[in-house]
Length: 167
Image 1 (tube, rainbow, N blue to C red):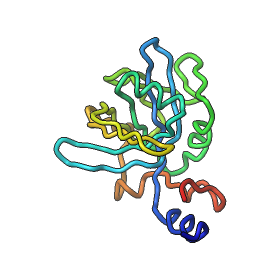
Image 2 (tube, rainbow, N blue to C red):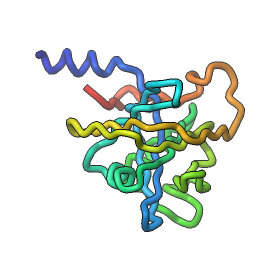
Image 3 (cartoon, rainbow, N blue to C red):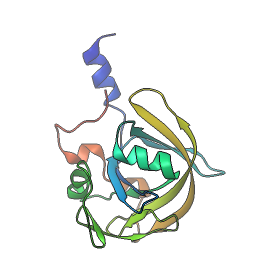
Image 4 (spheres, one colour):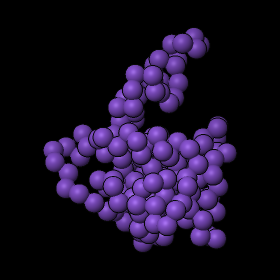
């Protein structure tokens, strides 16, 4: 397979950007920007979320079996970049973003348009990213969404011409 063709073709898959947050059993918080997310079923509402297998967020979610997926909205590039680095918790902020605990205890970012809380039902441990198949157990709308909901999400392409993930 031609490596350049593979990379270009796979980078054509559109990605939204999300901040995955979780609370460890000891109370420590973890967070990371993720983008390999898709809905897989309506009833029950299931998602598939791929997470780098050696990441801190993967370890916490594997331990606790739950997390929040905070949907970044248009104009939230700064938050996307902030969570590319290890999260810093100060008071009621995580990497500078105010939050409150959700029903599962996972942090819900107050600046995002929406968030869902998830419980892991299956883990597919293949490759350098593992796929968590999760059930959505709570949903939060922090602001009214105008127009199509899928137009409100911050997309990978919104981060600039040279920012890619995948391929």
